[in-house]
Length: 91
Image (tube, rainbow, N blue to C red; front, top):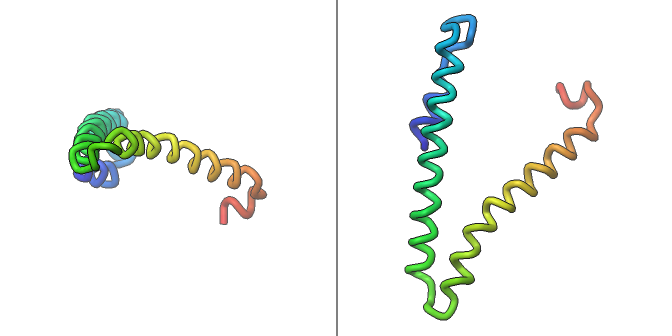
């Protein structure tokens, strides 16, 4: 995940590399998605194995809150950004 994210920052622009730049971006985003799926599964496994037996479901379910919580937080950020004037947003 980290390598694909870092490589995304190193991509040339479309003016520099043509169609290869967006194609490379798509490939790197696919690698990020695969890595994210692997990290999530491993995280749930570690949580459920290390939690007390009577609270395994509770702790394992909290991993799902990360996805929903992230959507709520980013939606709030976009809502706040829309409330800004154009000049305030650009600055």
